[in-house]
Length: 204
Image (tube, rainbow, N blue to C red):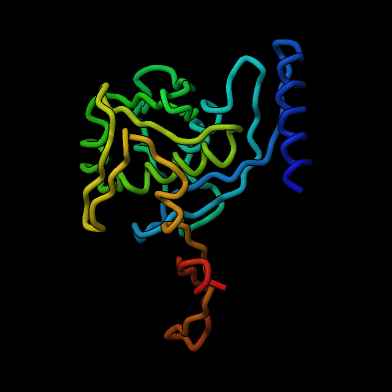
């Protein structure tokens, strides 16, 4: 029931805003991380604590920096030990009426990712899906690296263009995957359980 879900989200936001400075709200969030094979994004449920002196964005980014804690087939999407943000994220409304989250990343962030063998495509997808599927009434994400708006990604998977730099869920939906567990034989004549990341249909 989408109406009930929406009303609950609004009530939670109002309640946390009315509480004192030391109050908080614990919510369940779907965080998205990179699959280790570099092809897909995997969702991991996590309980996140929101305090009334923060917006939704920073707590979610902190959890993404922590990396996955449950799925062995998932990997982090933000370089470990590197501060991703140059300044605080903002939520603004564009001239055509879109409500957008802007993430100002530090200069050279994309270069550092490539040095560490991390995928810019997976990072953008993980940030976009995590934020847009939780923060209410937001239409898109804009990523700026050193002040320059990221409008295209070009890698071995091809080229992806973002009109006016706006990333949406539709851009990255095809990257969603699920883990299928299969059993393989061992030299000792036993079976071992392993995970394989596939598209959701094939995983089922």
